[in-house]
Image (cartoon, rainbow, N blue to C red; front, side, top):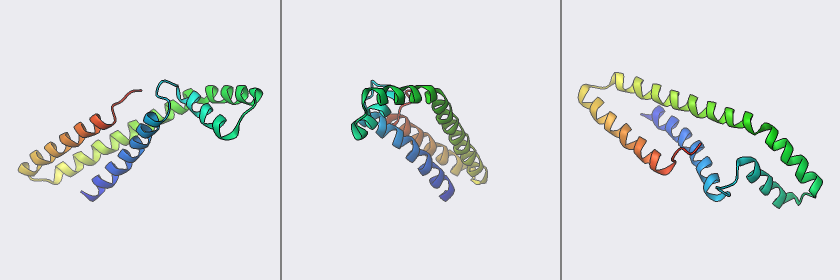
Length: 117
C-alpha cells in the first residue's frame, strides 16, 4: 500500500501541477503562448525578442507535448501494474474492496483533473 500511495502521490502531483497551470494560466491560450506571455511579463521583451522567443517555443511545442504524453502514459501503465501486483497478494474479499477503492480514486481523479489534451 505504501508503494501504491507513493506512486499515486507522484502521479497526482504531476497531473495536479499541470491542472494548476491550466487553471491559473490563460486556458484559452496554447502552451507556447502562455509561456511567452509569462516570460514577456517577467523579462519585458522588445518586439524582436518576443518574435524570436515565440518562434523557438512554437518550434519545440510538438516535441514537448509528445514527451508529456509519453510521461503520462508510462505513469499510468506503472500505476496499473502496481494495482495488479497488489491485487495478486490479496484475498478475494480484499480484492473486491481494493477494486472499489481504486474505482473511487479513479473517479475522484477524473473529476479533479479531466483530460483535456
